[in-house]
Image (cartoon, rainbow, N blue to C red; front, side):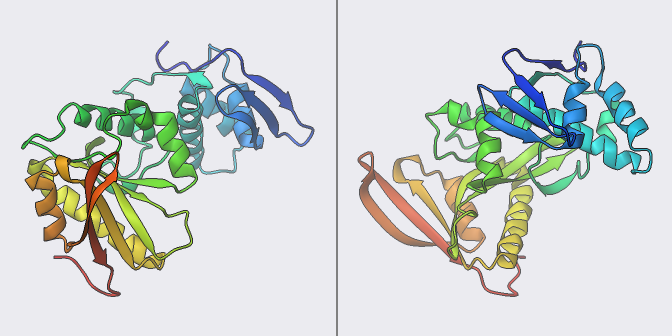
Length: 273
């Protein structure tokens, strides 16, 4: 049953003449599926496994690369699960699925297959916050629901908060999120920073990747706001090491708490060692 996706109740659909589909869900409201997504959703019947659906789409689009089809089907199923439109628990040792997931080692921008893992990673780190064994900056640390997979995906879809992750053997070791890519201004803010001193180099490499990414988007300044009562030596040492400097201290700025602001200007062509 685990790798057999099942539709959730309360989803209403209408097939269009052009092959597209109109979906209504209590979670997401009205959504439009293109022809391929509609075919994938239509073949979720409680009997077909994800591999069965991949084969059905392969048979229909024989001229399309099989790896591309497999990736599209899996990403669609992950998206449907995150949107609470299906129930699906793929087996972790599913070799056929793992071979399709790219960049199992290294840095990447989060995608459809990652939101559930990101949510679990954040919630696990929330239990260990402010310990010397962790490098942890969690702005909404008292609101677990803020870090549910559905809301993480929604914020990333609209570029309100984009998650960059470092993975080893398919497991997240470090995460940094960037807030404000959807705004037409030259600065952005760091949101989440999560890692472990044992994996400090993963965080450094992730930040370097982000900085180069932001340069390409013509961003010139990165800021981070930290509640003064939640500062740890690990997090401050990391920001100073990668070139941030203190910009301001705002007294009783938010919920009667002091906020420290650190900044870094991105210099074209500069590289971190």
